[in-house]
Amino acid sequence: MVRIDFVDDFQKYAQQGAFVDLTDLINEQNTPNIMREVPAEVLEQAKVGGKIYGIPYQGGPGAGYRWNLVMRKDYLESIGAKTPTTLDEYYNALKQIKAENPKVIPLGGYTAQIGEPKFANNSFDHIFGAFGVTPGFFTEENGKFGNYDIDPRMKDALLFLQQMYKEGLIDKEFATIKEEQLRTKLYNGQMFSWMGWWSTANGYDTMVETGELIKKGELAADGSLPDQNDQPYKYLTLTASLTGADGKAVAPAGAPFSQMNAISVKTKDPKQVLAIIEESLSPENQMLTVWGIEGKDYKFENDKMKAITDLVDPQTQQDPDGNYRGIQSYLFAPGLNGWPRYLESLPLRASEALDVAINNPYQITDASNYLDSPTKIAKLVELNTMRDSVFTQIIMGADIAKFDEFVEKWKSQGGTKILEELEASFKTKTGQ
Image 1 (spheres, rainbow, N blue to C red):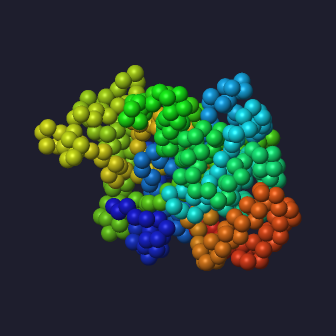
Image 2: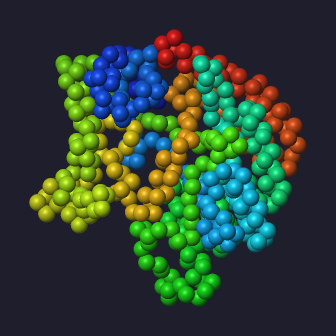
Image 3: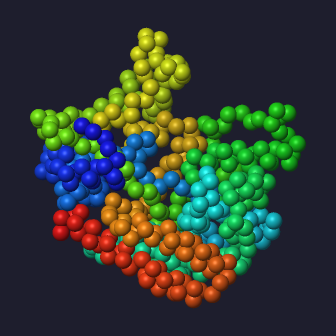
């Protein structure tokens, strides 16, 4: 058995006959554990030429969305509001906070993350999503493809963002500042809300607390704070997508998998190999392959799993008897649900932030994932650059007619060709 990247090598070698055809072997009756880990619709995406040649894999926390809408809960408390869950509630909270404290930026955004060029997609995920769209994602319905960038609802979302910008509810510098500059504003207490990657919330909360203690002259002489990873957030509240007028939302998750586990066509007994994979995915065997032995490598406290961290040498990952007891990963066990009880293994703050993000009920994936489009490869950066420029101009006050002009240019400069190629690739992949 081999674990192999899907996009490049797997599809090529599957077409060359390198892997066993598993189409008739994977089903609810014979492989219930595999079907529990990999939804039927994902198996469809993983097909090559309409057939199943491997099992998708995603380790760690599994597949899913990774962003939170982060807000200062002390600012919400100051206006007597609870954490908003709808776009209307959020918008009203922004206006009230702006009225009460004009120096506070209601919604912050930035143009880069870890040095990578980035548009306001993630900065305004929650706004776009409440209108049922998200920049850059392709859609598919009954074999016909589209793109949210040219969806009429995108125009409505841009008009709403334009209104927010005009009312001073969005940071005037969102189109130029970098993430580190946004952090400075957070540190100084200048910002109420922002979209944050799940793992940053703890650092942001500590950053805000440090700034508040400095203002009060109460920060320790060495500038440090006690470890608060397992303490509730003091200054922040996190939420998933805001719903729109129809009670729905969109949260743009990444591709559901990047690797495949496949069985070589030269295997003498592929059914036996598949049976081993199936058995390895039982709940008890997943706990064993990932976390080890209960009572030695992990324990349960109040029905929650905790890794025993003093059993192993952090340098060698070995116990006193010389046995290796580091995280085993899945060895050969595939699936999209990630490691069992993963959230429980994390400190409280990280667990809460990832839980909110990864269990966002409005997640969608890009319909173009795993499909072939030469024009998409050649033209998408150019189309996205054009989109970023036009959308930013509109948000900052340009005539909304620019959106209609953009739509026509998007289609004529490669967009229509991309949609045609995706539809043809979809038909080939699904065996139509």
